[in-house]
Structures are given as structure tokens and as C-alpha cells.
Image (cartoon, rainbow, N blue to C red):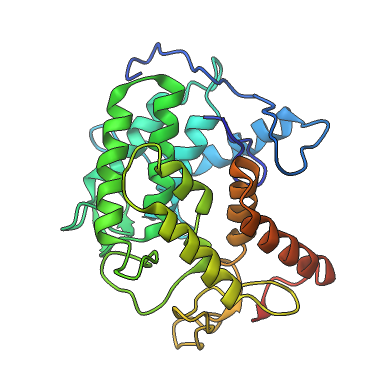
Length: 301
């Protein structure tokens, strides 16, 4: 099992609430690739998890669903559901008992599907979609959550659901050139922080789709889009790697900003799990760029 999300150690419940996790938190997993701290303070990770739970809302009318509150707390975005599913898988133990929380998040995802069977990206509470169409990063993370839930809790339903979701991703969120689209309804820009190449490698365990092509394209586009000096990537770019221009709704669209900050994490994940040389190259250069500008949140790319 692997590490996940910057602070929270990636580790990977059967549908029964009595299921015992095979990989209970904390795991202190060892990896062949990358640098592993000699000591990891599990108490700090547990505290971060408990802070995350303040955003977990299971007050659905029928008490069967849960959502992760957005910055505007009346809303939930599919990205948050994907994060929540991974967090619940990896934080399970006899104290946290997260399987039921995972299941409620996955039920919420499936409550608000678009016409292609993927979650609409922005939802108003437990009521209805506020913004239609999918966001690919959410599907990728949700699929990881399902695959790891199968490894954690052993219930075949998670693997079955993962395979179904991967089929929808491959059909609706990968374009004919083999690049991840930003969603199932548009493809005029690309978001490098969606390129979760470690997740794409994991998908090969459950899907016969040509994920290798998507992995190769993801690395190639990140390298084209990154700044030649800092290695930092823009939030958005075109398929040739040219940063997007500012828009009336997003003045930082072509900058290294909040979306783009996820790219180094996703690259570190790919290297720690699978030793991807491209991931190491991208991480190394962006790391040096961040060290040169430690206080910078936004940078022109």
C-alpha cells in the first residue's frame, strides 16, 4: 500500500460495518523510491484528519449520504468527494471506523450523476446540481478510492464499481489523442494538476484501457508547460503546453496557483509508488523552483 495527500500517509472496509481494515492507520509503509522520513508523527496526521472531518456533513434527509463542504459551505464539489473517499480509506482503524463514511460519500457521488454517468462537478447541498458536467480530477481520485477500498476492506462491490467508473473515465474523459480532458463536456484546455500518473498506473490493475498512452502524454505535456527556470506549471494550458490567458472569471488561469500546487504532490505520488523517472524529473525541478521562491503562491508561467 502507498502514501497519500502531502501529510496523510497513503494506505489503503467489506460492506459490513464490522469489517476490519487490512491496513489500519498508521502504517508507516516503506517505499523503494523517494525519501521517507525516519519518524512520522501519526498524532499530527490524526489531528489533520479530525480537522478534515469538520467539513464532513452527513445530514442528508435520509441519513444515507454524506458530502464534503466547499469553501462556500452550502456547496460540494466532486473534487472534495474524491479527496474524501481516499482519506476515509487510508485513515481507517478501530478508532476512526471510516468505512460507513466512505460508503456515504460514494452514495452522494452517485446521487448526482450527469447524463454520462459521472458526478456533476458542483452540487447545492443535498438537493441538486448547481453546475453540470464532470471534473476529471474527481473521477480519478474517486477511482483510486474505490480500488484501495477493495484492498482495504475486501468487498468485491468496490472493485466492480471501480471498473465501471474506469470505463466511464476512459470513454468520456480521455480524448482521441490520449490526453485527459478537464471534464466530460469540454476539452479546450488541459489542467496539469489533473494528471495523476500514479493513479493512472494503478488503473492498469483493473482496466485493459491503454493507460500507458495517457501516462506518457501527461508527462510530455507537463514538461512542455512547465516554466524553464522554476519548473512550475500553470493552472491551465492548451494541448501544446501554452499557459492559458487570464479570463474575466479567472485572472490567474495561466499562472502557478491553487490548482497547480497539486501537481508536485501527484508527481511525488507517482515516483514513490512506481519510480517513474519522468515524475522524479518534474518533482526535482519544481522543488528547486519552490525553494527559490518559498513565499510565492502565484507565479507567471
